[in-house]
Every structure is written in C-alpha cells, then in structure tokens.
Length: 144
Image (spheres, rainbow, N blue to C red):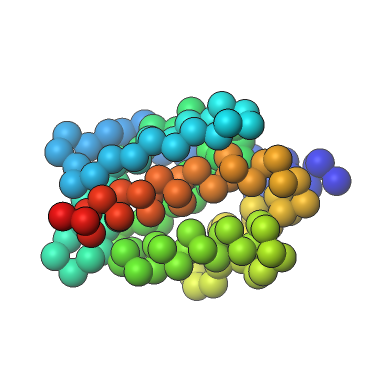
C-alpha cells in the first residue's frame, strides 16, 4: 500500500535531512540523478588515511524517499569505512530488488524504514541515489 511508502518513519527521516552543505576541498564529488522522477543528490567526500569518512557534504534535491535515504546517510556516515559503505550500497540494492533484509548494524538501523519501497520498483532509483553517489566518490578516491 502506498501509505507504507510514505510512512511516518520515512517522512520523519526526510524532514530531518541536514541543511545542504558542500565541502570546500573534497577528495571526490559525484552527482546522481533519477531518470524516473528527476531527483538529484550531489555528494562531496573526504576520507582519512585509514579509509574512514572524515568529511561529508551533500545537496539533495529529491523526493521524500531520496531525501529520507540521504538524510539517514548524512547523519551516520562520518567514521564509516569505505568497505562498509560499498557493502551498504549492495545491501540496499538487495533489500529493494531481491527481498533481502535491511542493512545490519546499529549505524544503519534507520534504513529499515525504507524496506516497504521494495514493492514500488519505480521508486528504487531515487532511494538509491545517495548510496550510488557515495560509491562513485569512493571509486574516484581509490583510483588515485
């Protein structure tokens, strides 16, 4: 049911999105756009020598679902390691597209609110934007 997609948990997460903030000198930047709805997420990322996120900037002009996902990531990404972020992207894809469980661990527990989106494939792209943008940034950093 569509009311599951726009649950209080999703709307609360979307409303709690941090203000747009771009980094002055990121190690990488990426922009992802949903062709379905036009949602956009731009991410700036810097990681420390141990591969953990040191700084994160983001501007999300997205639907409630894209904003909810971006909000949860923005509030929890600092200190996350690159390998865990790639795994997070893969777990989110699997949750939405393969009926897998939500990502595990306390850091990402709030992402379980996005689980009902799996029943609406046309909404997957906007929900995954932030995860794809973060992975793109990590790829850029690793390529150096």
